[in-house]
Every structure is written in C-alpha cells, then in structure tokens.
Length: 515
Image (cartoon, rainbow, N blue to C red; front, side, top):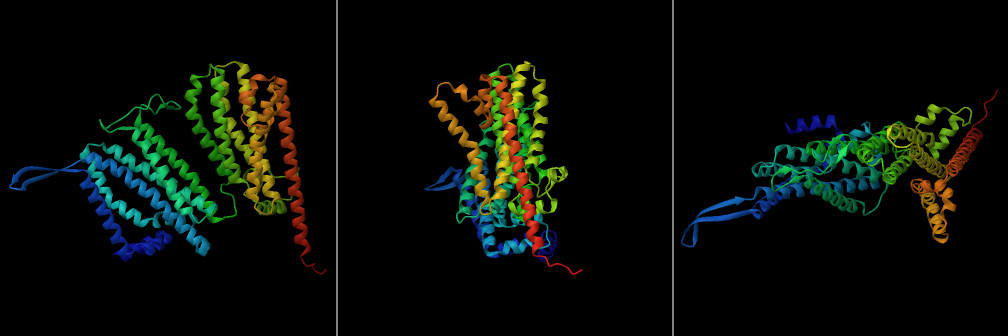
C-alpha cells in the first residue's frame, strides 16, 4: 500500500518523491519522532504541578497531576513556528547550494517537469523531517488550546497565518539562493528566519489578551473604510491576504529565475500587476490618515513624502527585476532593428528582452491613475493640488531617470554589469544629496540651490517646493525632461550600434552562397 501511494505521489510530483526518498529513512524518522515526543513530554513536565492528597507513611498514596494548559499552548505557539522558520530555511538553502555546486540543479532544469512542480517538490520535500516532527506535536498543541479555553477560530487563524508566512519565507530564501551564493548562506538565512519569525509571532500575540482569552482592540486603525483595529477577524483576514499576495509575487520571481537564471525576475506584464496591487495597498493604508489631515498642508505633504519614499523602494525593485542583461538587449536590438521611427510600442511595453524604461513609464502611469483621482477629489485649495501634482511629477521623473541609468549600465558593461548598475544607481541617489547638503551648510541662503534640489534629489520637492516659485518648478521639470530625453536618445543610439555591430559580425562569418 505504501509503495502504491508513493507511486501515485511520484506521478503527481516526481521531485517531491525524489526528495522524500532521499531523506525519509526509517532511522531518521525514528530519531525525529522520538525527539518530538520527548520534547512534548518535557514541556508537559515543565508546566505541570504534582499534588499529594493522602500520605501513607513517607509515601504518597493519592497523587494527582495538574497541567497548565495555557502555558503549554503558548510555549508551542512559539516553538513550532520557529523550528519551521529556522530549520526549514536552513535545510532548503543548504540543499540548494549543494545542488548548485554539484551541478545537479542544472540537470533538474533539463527535466520535462514544470519549474513550479520542481520548486514545490523541494519546498515540500526537503524539510520533510521537520514537518514530521511538528505534525506529531500538533495534537498536543490543539488539545492544550482546547483545554485552556482558547477559541478554535484563533487556533485555526494561527495555523493559516503560519502557513502563509512559511510560504513567504521559503519562496524568499529560494529567490535569494538563486541570486547569490555564499558558504554561510544557509546559517545566515536560518538566523534571519528565526529573527523575522520571532517578530511576527510577537505581533500576533499583541492581538490577543491571554488573561481574558479574547481579542484586543488595536485602536482606530483603518484600511480604506475597514476598521481593522476594532475588528480582529478582519485584521487577521487582511494580514493573511497580504502575506499570500507577497508570497505569490516572490514565487513568480523564483519560478522565472529557476527556468532562466540569465533572464529577468519579472515579466513586464507582471510588473504592471505588481505595482498596481502594491499601490492599492499603500492607498488603503494612508487614505484614512490623508483624509483626516488634508487641512494641514505640512501634514498632508509629510504623508505624501512617506508614500513617495515607499514608492521609490518599490520601483527600485521593479527596475532591477525587469531590466534585461546585456546579451538579451543585444539579441533584441539585432532582431528588432532598433530605429526611433519603427520601434514597436507593443514590444517595448511587453517584450521579454526589450529595455525597461518604457515599462517603468507605464508603471508610473498606473501609479498616477491610482493616486491622482483621490488627490483631485480632496477638498483642498487649487494651489495645494498643483503643488502636490508637481511633487509627484518631479518624483516620477527621477524614477524614470534611475531606470535609464540602470539600463544603460547593464547594456554597456560586459563584466559584472549588476555591480556597475548598482553603483551608478547609488551615486545617482546619494551624490546629489551629499553635495547639495554640503552647499546648504556652507551657504546660509539655501534657496539659491532650490532648483538643483528639485531636479536631482528624490523627495526634496516635498520640502523645497513651498519655498520656490512656479517658474523654478517649471524650469526644473524642463531640465528633468531634457535629461530624460538625452538619456533615452543615448540608450536608443547604443542599441542601434549594438544591433548593427552584432549583425555585421554575424554576417561576416557566414559563407557566401554561389550564384
């Protein structure tokens, strides 16, 4: 019967069967089962009290045990997930690094199995012994919660959240293993999983009062129009969906990187959905605060400045995830025959190997579509609306500038283009801020440099814009657009040259056919 079950399991996911056969040995299973049962027995003894009701000489004739079920339940609440986060992460990373070094990972890529099946087989199969040990402890955890009077809904939601976080962590570590390799990677990932898992479990406990065994209120905290602070079940559902969406996008990146390590982490179409979903998430978080503080211009601009910084972090990740490498750009330039008049916009918007700046512009347009309607509907003065829109436009131009810088460096550099692109991006982000801050400290009249702040420092418009005139803002926008146009022209020119040189070298090595 076991053999038949394994055969059926192998038909569904051969990679999972391979991992199970390599790890699920009788000796290992006995050791894990014994360790799990001994650990549970130790916890029971630790949180129990012996009471003797009748003595017979020096002996106790009537002995009873009292177990502190709530303490047992809370202890398992911490131990089971932390073992899952730390040991599971360690095993996954160690297995991935080992297979990467031995070359078997490339062999697995050549198998006819879908990449998602292979990755899912590893996530389910590599930590199989951890799953076994924890599964043996789940009955004690459930019984302890029931006897302690913990609501069943809380226990079910706890398991759902831990499962979602586990999927997020495991997908993230596989993505990290696909991008970087280090000898200490597995150990570092294990400690990081332990720390992040502990932080998440601490946040979960904040929503529950263990003295009254009831949910606690977290204040007047809204997401859009839902009061999450006073409705814990809505908060739990919101957290679960948020974690699942994050795990989904990381899973998409892992799947693409596994299929093609030299490709982009995200397709351009995926980036549009990613940016749209994250911006809606940001809008839901900040909308209640913005609606309450719209009358105070400083508070309004402060919240919008925070949103712009979060958007910058999102777009830096998207830029890195959809910008193709040099060889992909050369292939695209060779077969697309790059020309400013004949470029296919459909290819630029959705092509796998096309440059990223046009897709970044589309993502910026998606962001504007999400935020501008709310901004225009606010009951604020026209002057404040114009300033806010100008701030958003100046920030969007800088994000487009960063995308062009990264793509140019990935195209130009043959050796270690990622390092060059990251270094250039860091210079573009922090060098103007450093120089202008030094000048600001040297000269007391900082308004002289306001135009430079608007053009080159991300986030500066939210602070400087109130001190400058409309003419300064207008010329700052013209300067940014001129820089963007110049960089775009330079990128197109380099792609033209790259396509021509590649085609010439290709045709030069081709034998001439006789007439």
